[in-house]
Picture (cartoon, rainbow, N blue to C red):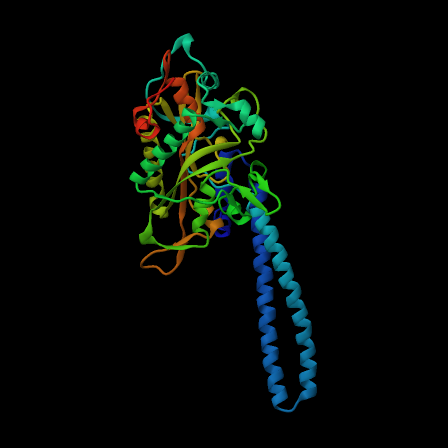
Amino acid sequence: MLTLKFIQENKETVIDRLKVKNMDATTLVMKVIDLDNLRKSTQNQLDNTLAEINNISRQIGILMKNGQAAEAGQVRQKTTELKERSKELGISINETEKELNNVLVLLPNLPHSSVPTGKGAEDNEIIREGGVIPQLGDASFPHWDLAKKYNIIDFELGNKLTGSGFPVYIGKGAKLQRALISFFLDEASKAGFVEVMPPLMVNEDSGFGTGQLPDKEGQMYHVGLDNFYLIPTAEVPVTNIYRDVILESSSFPVKNTAYTPCFRREAGSYGKDVRGLNRLHQFDKVEIVVIEHPDRSYDTLELMVDHVERLVKKLGLPYRIVKLCGGDMSFTSALTYDFEVFAAGQQKWLEVSSVSNFESFQANRLKLRFRDENDKKTKLAHTLNGSALALPRIVAALLENFQTPDGIRIPECLVPYSGFDMID
């Protein structure tokens, strides 16, 4: 979340920048400032009251030492009144702080100055494109037909076992999943990312730390009895490894990668865009997470984009990289690049990765700080993450783009992992 100091000193900037995210934040910003001023004023009253109590206590001690018990008793009555006043002020501060935090978490992260204005995906800016879109003509089929033809993904069985959006991968379909996961993890390791295997459920503090709570509470599966949440992405547990941590600046960049299943309710999703693998409630993803020095986070963001671009190139998929406009960005992001691949069977672009810089927004929630070598004062770190990659739409594009009359070709980079070069 945004720091109170920044909001107090840059209220007009906050209001102006959030307009790029199509939000009129004037009321919220002014309420934050008013509540913060009230908190400070009340704290000042409490400090003065406590100081007065201390002074009176010293007076009582002197009076008692001088044998003036009656006078000490009179002064002690004032101490009782002041203590009651200090108790009331303490309660008021706690109530104000609670209200202040409830309002503060409603403010999204500020978009970077390069973020284009716009309301939705149609206003995103295409940065670059690569690969060749296959021309398959009338002989092409969408992946859900191919999955049924070659018996590699069973959507109906998944519906029987759990419900819509929980497919069952079979035979070479399951092996292709495993091949992609291993390939992505190995490529991340080569790029210097340290692999971790985190829990698949997190507590409320973790959900709050990366911004899923309270913003996306309705999109996460909640385990009510234990008050845990199934993770929507490995970003949540991996980034929270560094919650309440102070790093040394010499440790930057801190780079982690993780494979996990991901769980999303996708409430409100419907229609043709959810067919097949296009939108699932459970899917596999390899994530990359970086904790970085603020001076270098945008250079690191470009390196992460380059890493994801190498992956889609090696898979031989036509792709484009888009910079999200303000209206299409997440609550927590300062700058996001999406990767889309073209799926020839559907004749459409599918999003397969988001690579984002959150600057200090998550770090402030996480209390993730660092200390420079020559400066004892701690500062907020920057956090970044990216999908590298999410599997469902990658699988959809692979099946559709590499279909032939004889079967589905497997990209050369995956053959050592899959053990086969054709699904037939």
